[in-house]
Image (cartoon, rainbow, N blue to C red; front, side, top):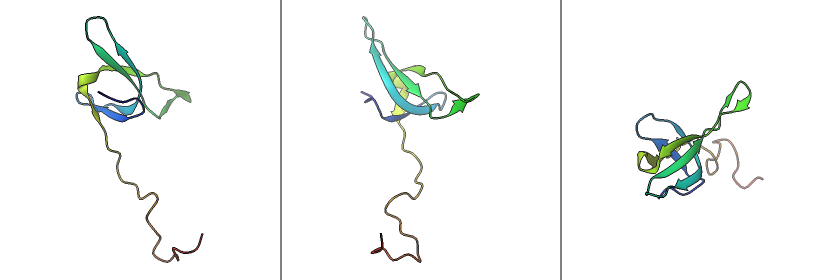
Amino acid sequence: MIELGTRVKDSITGFCGIATARTVYLYGCIRVAVETTGLKELKPIEPVWFDEQRLAKDSPAQSGGPGIVAPNRDPRMP
């Protein structure tokens, strides 16, 4: 099961984004809405719905982020 708020990737199209909604239909079809963080013509892009079984958790690329200390910086300084 895909948890809402998880970063996911569609296995067929490669579409990536955040799972923001989940719908369970009467006969068992489960669909998940995925929203990207980008903009199109300065407006948010509409969510795209996928069958849950097509989605997998997507691990974002490592960007450095917290925990990496610049080589010339004293880690004890705020």
